[in-house]
Amino acid sequence: MVRSAEWWLNGSFSQVDAFVVPGAGLSSLPSTTRSSIDSAATPRTRAGRTAPSMAVKFEAARKMRVAVVGGGPSGSCAAEVFAQEPNMDTYLFERKLDNIKPCGGAIPLCMIDEFQIPSEKIDRKVRKMIMISPTGKEVPIGQTLGPEEYIGMTRREVIDGFLRERAEKYGAKCINGLVTKIDLPADDSPTAPYTLHYSNYDGKKTGTPESLECDIVVGGDGANSRVAKAIDAGEYNYAIAFQERIRITDEQMSFYNELAEMYVGADVSPDFYGWVFPKYDHVGVGTGTVMNRPDIKKYQNAIRARCEDKISGGSIIKVLAAASHQPSKGVKRHFRGP
Image (cartoon, rainbow, N blue to C red; front, top):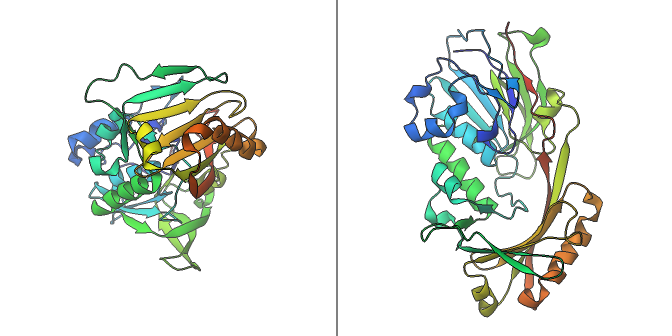
């Protein structure tokens, strides 16, 4: 088993450019899990870059310790894979276990299958999608869906919680904590551990300062990544998303029974799109942008105005806003060994 360090996850675990653990016992994982992380099996070349391989053997008389920072889909899926390896102790850090991300929550059927998401975690099964132009012209998309195919409409607190719980069932230890600092091994020592400093909340309002030594650090902690800061990943772009959850009448909801809408135009976003996505008892109305983040509320007002005739009289039950990492120059890694 090789000595490793940090991988900064880019959006989802399947997008990691390199995850190389020769001889780590991946053959012991279920075939479905192995196939979904084919990038973990061997070094590979992607986008003109050769994935690095680490050549320092891990020979300590104990299990390898893995810390995954961030309990969203990326981090939870990474922790699930590590937790199934009998020679690893896996720790999953998440500050807000009930966090609700301002995410549209639309996922394709292939993701539902690949990540084995149960049907009861899907709020709505959308089979019709309409794209609406600035002039109001409606263009149906998604017409290639088969009779049993659909686009899954989900809520992030449901999906994120499910993926974290599944990682825990495989043996990952979930820590309700905020990682504040990561000490890299002195002089890039191939044997010294990383030290994570964090506030352990454990359901409390005030965190207790604690630390953890580990051999691998995986960063899945989003736009304000502490892992990225620790390895000096440099500047990177990010998007901001804004979404309102709006409860409308049953009659209005029936319009969105199997339908989702996407609105395009500079009024709702200069580079993204606005959306109306149905959930189990409400609709998510939102937008996002990279180019002009300060005007996100203006774009949100515009998307609400564009769909006003369909959601009029609705009551806002939750307002959500957050930043999301948007990679532009690849993912920086920190690794050790000759």
